[in-house]
Image (tube, rainbow, N blue to C red; front, side, top):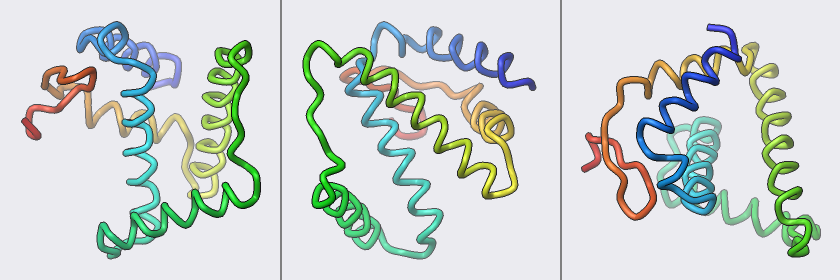
Length: 132
C-alpha cells in the first residue's frame, strides 16, 4: 500500500482501539521506547535482556555526558514534540534506506502485523490479547 493509504489505516486502527483519546503522549512514548529497544536488540542479536539494558543505559549516559539531553521551556513544548516526531521519522527513513528498504515497506510490514490485533486498554496502554 502507498504510505498515505496505510497511514490512514493505522490512524483508524488507533481510533478503533481508543489509542487516540484513551492513551497519553507518555504511554505512547513508552511504547515508542519499547519499539526502539526492539531495534537495538535486532542490532545486538543474541544478547540477553540485561546486556541490552546495559547498552541502552550506556547510550543514554553518553548522550547526557555530551550535553544532548536538554530541557524544553514550557512555551516551546508543543513545537518541540512535533519537531521530535519529525526528527524521528527522518532518522527512521535513514535506517530503512541504509538497510536497503523504505519507510513505506517498514510501515506496511508493521500494519500487516497489527491490523487484526485485539486487546484492551490498561492504564492508558493497549495490551494485545496474547499478553493479557
